Image (cartoon, rainbow, N blue to C red; front, side, top):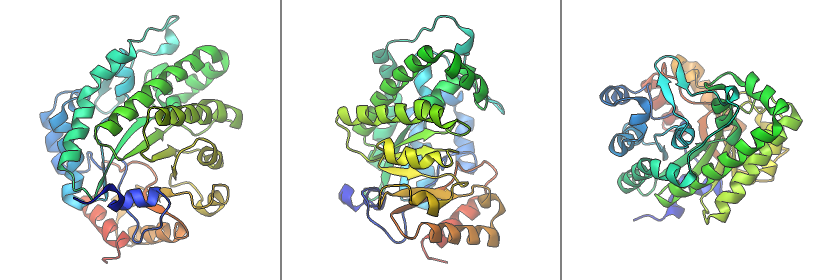
Length: 345
């Protein structure tokens, strides 16, 4: 069996330049694949799907079987944490997640974290199943949502409405800070359990890092992420951690420098060269192809792939998208992207 040191993704995350770069995609297990849609049709609700270890493992492995990515990312969702804490999460087809908004409640109640971890046991079983079935040369990625991102869903009751959560951050700083402390601890425990179950790499998805003034970005994103990384390390986890502060703009440099993450994932709006000058020398970067190119395909896709490879050519790089792949993406374009990344076309 090949050791973990043979995984291309781990070599890059430890600071080595690998050619061609390892490649995986955010949301690579998902609705753009017909086999996923068939599997999803057999599942119950979306969360029931996430909590069904055999089905979640199958979904995780589908893109590996089809494309041979260098890493699998565990099929789950960032909102399993509030769901496990007793804040019931529902997914409405075509609309997304729904929770009871914390903003509307004067007193907040959360279930015990030990109970929450027991509720998340199916996620860890899915990770064990995937790691057992996965080629030893391929990494398994576990993940959580960033504390601020998960807090915005919990405060507003749904995604995309961050203004109310931002107002709450100004109006009720003590209550929000207490929520972030809870989410840091719960997220650290969740990441540690995923690592114990076989995940070789961990990623923090701070999907709502955009549109925050610098002082608020520091308080809501950088400081909780610092605390989360420190807590994961205190729990004995040495797996490399990738941070993805989507839409952070110029603040991404401070995020990469100060939070303690091992690698920085960039969205497709990030300017690589000026950002790299603000980061520690040799810091691994991940990204950042525009996902829409996987719908368009053709010469536009080829040029986009080559532009990304050129932009990241001077340091350790994990090829990825600048955000999750869309349901409209063509699997044939995904296959073409891999050929161009690997120099096979």
